[in-house]
Length: 257
Image (spheres, rainbow, N blue to C red):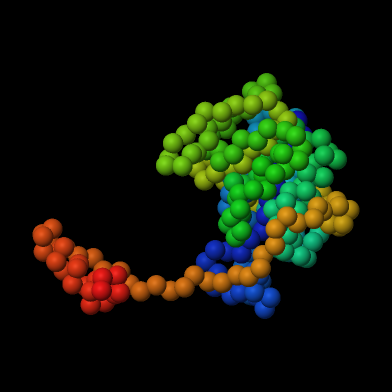
């Protein structure tokens, strides 16, 4: 089986973010970088499947600048066979459609049986790239998975729905799945595996070689949410609360005039 995992490098979410000079994205200076959390679940599930099958070949792909190579090496230390960096210093400016087109072009060239991706990236949060890749490749997609199994070419899984409900779904490979929190517990790379990862293949492909599609949307501006005033909690009997609430609304707001 030929497996692909799509991963993205993002800033640590505990970072102090600033909007860049163009006003369309965050300033990338002085940030700590890591693998997108949902993508870690994707890598772990792919490695588990490789271990289950025994003869699977596992590639991890990331689009971004040179610093993404360090994150790819983590995926290699977790158990992937090779890494591919699509070199692009401006990947953060691309919309989901353009990113998906790059992945789909690469995947089409290598005929993958199964593609894993995170449910969404923690910085952009569109949750569109995975399903767009599947659409471009003409294969089924199963999204927001919290359980996964594979037997004789059939994927059986549970999807997390809104409100905590879960749906049982299945399809046959080739297919694409996106991974949600709770699917598994990503392994921590051991020192021996980190050393082995240094000897594994890590290819770099110029972004232009994959003919990225034109964007379908553009970020015009970006801003932090406006600060809101503190809330007020009222306690007591219902009749007294109603009177107090009316008085507060009249004195502090223009809701009642």
